[in-house]
Length: 245
Image (cartoon, rainbow, N blue to C red; front, side, top):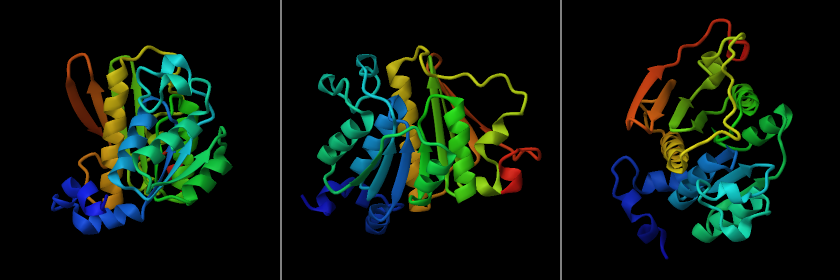
């Protein structure tokens, strides 16, 4: 199948076109976390024609993952998420180049992985990982698309230039006690997909150089009421990460 047929609907977009599709083919992204957010975001990026995906997770597929982690099938239970993801994405789009990182990355490893890509998607489910990913993106001057989902609620934050501030850490003061982990919490499966889809959309816009209304903003989704809102994120003068970047 020719690219002109595969990506016909992209090529029909005036903001995309053949030049945008080629730009995407030359682009790369690091996705940290292959749960409900990362499985959906990675599938859209691969199917959209990104050239290289680096995927990171240290977990194995569990049967409880299957309702919301749509890349995985019952036969994948027990397999490493990185390996199952790479296999499924190669099936979806054989032209995408896959790199798997099957470890719990520390700050140095996150910096090394971020250095080799054009942007980073944080699809993790805990604040410790999110703060490390943000610190790596600030240090390596890489755009960051951060997502979170719990219960009926979702959030996406877009930081095109986290080294210049604001960054994800600006959202939280040093004495903030609301660092709640999403791991093990209840969640409605499609809410995770909604957030992952939004992350893929924002990542594609960044890779294509398109402006986003979510630049340095936090998008908040309430699945129960069906409403969304967004709030500006201001650079915090005392931020321990981006103030010294």
